[in-house]
Image (cartoon, rainbow, N blue to C red; front, side, top):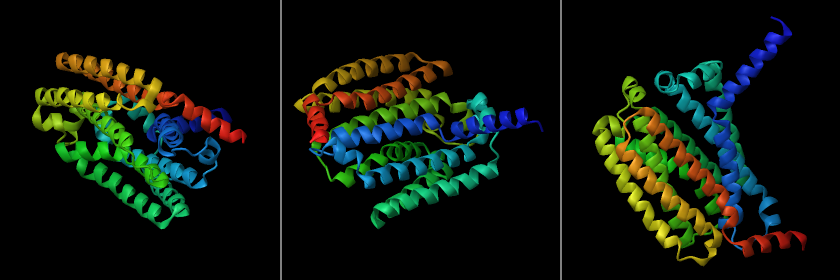
Length: 306
């Protein structure tokens, strides 16, 4: 094999591995955890204190490794479904052998556990349970309508719980914000299940739209979207959100649009559009944390200079 062919093969495998572990999602998760730590969970602590907190770094690295492993095992079990739902991605993912994926799955989980152990035995226990939860979801729970939906939503938001416990900040505004995220993520998961219904049927996954039908799934989507307006209205009563209130105005408008569009949607591409809109909304929400309280930002930056 020529050096050019070897380079091309290595490049394909690199992109394939990044696709399997959802590299872009991992980067967003890291940004989300640090921004949440700085502007929500850490309270009055300075920016320097948060950025130089090695236990926080270990928690973020542990989460990164465990989530990457979770994407790998999910990809491992979903090969047949992905060939139907995402043929292009499935083709790219196939450059990494299944045996290699399994080896990386165990390596990432072990490294994640070790980072957790560097924080405390409680953190190591948390990540051990989290690893088991992701595997159990991928292997069993995702095949069931209600439990699959609740478990994947919980697993998505759970990494932030580790950061919350680390800073011991259990304020009401954090709880309300978590409720908003939980509802939006659940809506996104139902929409994704409707989008991927053909692959679910082929893989014998009894997801919510497979079990209850597309019409019932739409009704639940609209009901959950109405519920999201409750935490939004509550958050407006907290002065600390300052400029972030414009994000929630925007979110309310987008969620109303999603509800109307979902009601009329019939094609896979329409559901994919809604899925991507909600992903973008959550991404904007991550970076809107920068505007949560300008005085807090100034205080944290000034403390760096002290």
